[in-house]
Amino acid sequence: MALQQLFRIKPTDEIVSEAGQGEGGELRRTMGLWQLTLFSVGATLGTGIFVILGQAVPKAGPAVVLAFVVAAVTALLSALSYAELAGTIPVSGSSYSYAYATLGEIVAWVCGWCLMLEYAVSVAAVAVGWGEYLNTFFQGLFGWQLPAAITHSPGDKGGVVNVTAILIVALCTWLLLGGASESAKANVVFVLIKVVVLAFFCIVAFTAFQTKNFTPFAPLGVAGVTAAASQVFFSYIGFDAASTAGEEAKNPRRDLPLAIVFSLLIVTVIYVLVAVAAVGAMPWTEFDPDSTEASLALIVDQATGATWPGLIVSFGAVIAIASVVLTVMYGQTRILFAMSRDGLIPKVFQKVNPRRQVPVANTLIVALFIAVLAGLVPLGQLAEATSIGTLFAFALVNVGVIVLRRTRPDLPRNFRTPLFPVTPILGVIMCVLVMAGLAGVTWVAFLLWMILGFACYFLYGYRHSRLNTEAPQ
Image (cartoon, rainbow, N blue to C red; front, side):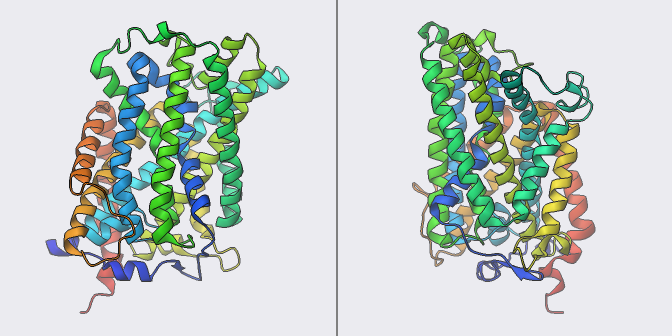
């Protein structure tokens, strides 16, 4: 096995020419700029505010607002690199395909393996929090809740199997099997509902706003802000979802870069507004990291002295989290579709149903894997594991932009990363800094995941790679 074979690059022209092609059929181009933007918003908006915010506040105090900004800047630097590569290589593989065209097969595999951690595990993490808001909604509407045994993971508050998490995964799977266009339409409705609900939360929370809640602003210092930023970075995972729709976009070279940047800006503004409103309405010391999955509903109930505002927020969270599960599951299946087409994972993942024009078997396998994770693993462990995989993939994308600019300056680029090469270099640095704030156990889990990934590559991916099997003898 020659070292140069591990770093063989798949030509950009070949990657683009294969767009949409699968075994037994092709993907259908149905998404415009509006749908792509909301797809990314749908994949992003909800996790950080409805699920993670309550856990991050005790780490940073009122400075959690700053933590959201730090995480946003980190995401933006990488988003600009994503935007350039998405417009240059508009395919479903996202950063996996970008790495294949710039850094070589082994790096592309590592990136794809990290994306599996990012997408599949983030969906599971979000699904875990869905049951908490569903129970808050049921309590406000009917006065009863589902038993803890089926709404929490094993070992968490009496949980046995998180059946509600499995249920939301199953519902989103059903939508995805209906087709990309139908899924995008459902997501538009979901996104509009959750934006309206978050606006309602801000209006109510600002009626109880007290400036004294921001003093002292950073009681836990810079370390607290960094720790919170590392956790809430999970909230920004999803802006790259548009890049996974490259083979189902009507005008991918123009629309993908715009959708990525627009969605991140929209989400950042909403996150900061909601964080300010939340901390202003409730002292940071009252945020309990052990029971804050439904913290926004609690805040509006306390602000008004009534239960109906929390009912509305809980309904919005139920919809928001469903939207995240739907769109991120979609992204996971399309990345696996691209990896399968390259021969790095089994062919079953690239089979397209000719009638529905979606990878049915791929979708069902992903759904089963996510359902098992969501039903059996607690939220906190999932969130941090997702962040580290994502940050690593983002760092590779920033490096990929620099490499492709030098190796293929002739390629058409509808969007160029501003202040090049400063922006992608800063993107790498920020990713490393945020990764450094993650817990040691998260690093151990990531290392074990990478060891497993390399084993899969050398046992299967390397031998079945199309660049290997189709190479001239």
